[in-house]
Amino acid sequence: MKLGELQAVPGVQKNRKRLGRGEGSGTGKQAGRGHNGYHSRSGSKRRSWFEGGQMPLQRRVPKRGFSNARFKTIHQIVSLASIEKLGEKKVDVATMWECGLIQTVMDPVKVLANGEIGSGVEVTAHAFSKGAAEKIEKAGSKAIIV
Image 1: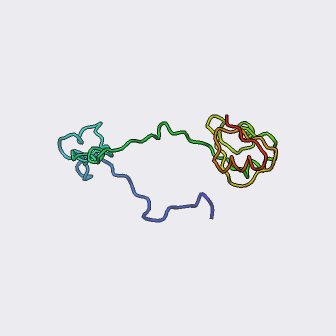
Image 2: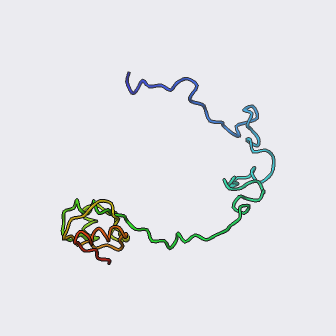
Image 3: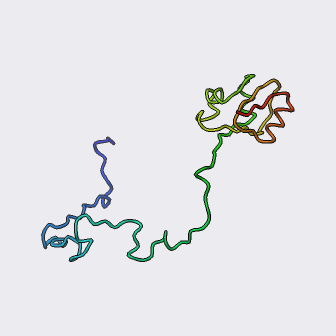
């Protein structure tokens, strides 16, 4: 079998409907648009949210509550185990970014208590979980908040 010999399965390919090509075609004259009215004209669109004049969904559903998502601070998460794998004595946001632990230097970083950490490591981040801070202090290391 060669690429040039490939053919579609019979019945799969259909010819498109040719509109406005004479009365004998069955879709001549108004070309399937009916007589007069908004949708018979060019430039009319059936918008996906339009419900035919019925009260639209976004107006039917009651609006309640408040969302503070706009002002929410989203931290990048780093575990103690991944910091320990780096094997460095001073770990800050720039180091984490260079080693691929975080996506960007612009967003704040939070260290979580997954795993253990060795002694003498100085970790600098924007936030620490309670467990992570306790584990770092217990190991004789430093947790510095930026």
